Image 1 (cartoon, rainbow, N blue to C red):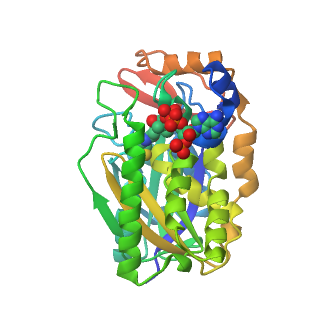
Image 2: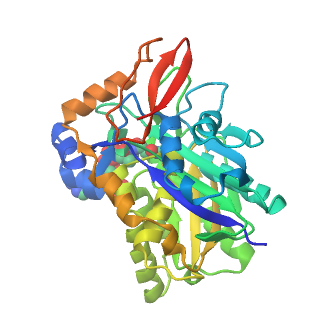
Amino acid sequence: MKVGIDQIGYFTPNKYVDMVDLAHARNQDPNKFLIGIGQKKMSVADPTQDAVSMGINATLRYIDKIDQSKVGLLIFGTESSVDQSKSGSLFVKSALKLDPAVRAFEVKEACFGLTAGLMIAQDFVRLHPDQTAIVIGSDIARYGINTAGEVTQGAGSVSLLVSSNPRILELNEGHSAYSEDINDFWRPNYSKTAKVDGKYSTQVYLDFFKHTFSDYKRQKGLETKDFAAIAYHLPFTKMGLKANRLAIEGVDEETNARLMDSFTASKELNANVGNIYTGSLYLSLLSLLENGGLKAGDLIGLFSYGSGAMAEFYSANVVEGYENELDKAADEALLDKRRKLSVPEYEKIFSASLVDPQNNVELTSDEKKGRYYFAGICDDIRQYRVK
Ligand code: COA
């Protein structure tokens, strides 16, 4: 039975910092950020954009194209949760006016959260082929001003619709998962910024990639040359480049060139949005679909990684006519229409976002008309409004 990704919507807030400006402000060679880290720009969320509002905005990108009455499951994956109890899914459900019969909840395992949701959604749709599932990954990556991780920040959300008649990608059954209880990246409840051992995290990511990729190929009787492309979790694009170099070790020239070209296609959106944690792999997938010249039937490998750490490799095939479901021009416009912040402006917004919002103080947003935003807390209850 066919199950897969029917729609993909992404959203990123309307402000960014240019990595060349950031490098100058931090007395670094811009090429360290542009080439060494592989990032060009990073989106910045002001206090009126949070995981929930971004998740709503990402889902709104395709909501008019789907039958909302069929959505039976709504999963919200995040590590930037807005509440310890209530799930982000319920705010989204309310904004999208979904049927009360929808099963709605939130999941967490660092950047693996959206993949975890997708795997649950896949099983759900296999059991209930007449229903669909919305799976959202939404995050703000915050490491801190003047830290090594600062250049790997970002903000955004990716929303997927999973159905039994997928118009973009057909997911293949089976996967290779691998986990270990380690401390490479985490965010304690008392901290608004992440704790990270970046070099260790990179090493674990690469080790888990090697393990799951070779195990998946063994399970399925596949070789590296069978993949038209591999999409990676990209907290910064250099991380995926390192994994891709491992993937193509010892392959023939044609496969080498193809997987390098497809990697280049897959990093364009991420290099300009920055790290969006849970959504990063799926933003890269969108970038690949829009820039990679893929054909119907092509096999794509997907590598998901969440610190702590949990990884999974799985695959999907491109569906005929997938390009008609994408809107590359609108996706690029979302980036082009952002306002460039000076580094002091970004620092001010960053510092403001570390402070909890005051009760009964209304916030106003400068996002464009039709976008959802966080309007502040009223009697301890979060308010979401449409502009
Ligand atoms: N031109 C080109 N490349 C340059 C350069 C220059 N002028 N200066 C440095 N570089 C390269 C380095 O050689 C290095 O490349 P390599 O990774 O291939 O060895 C790269 O830039 C990074 O420089 P380095 O000094 O090693 O790193 P750093 O101490 O600045 O930290 C991270 C980089 C990625 C470790 C840090 O930003 C971080 O911890 N980010 C968070 C990581 C994360 O999110 N992990 C968890 C999620 S999976």
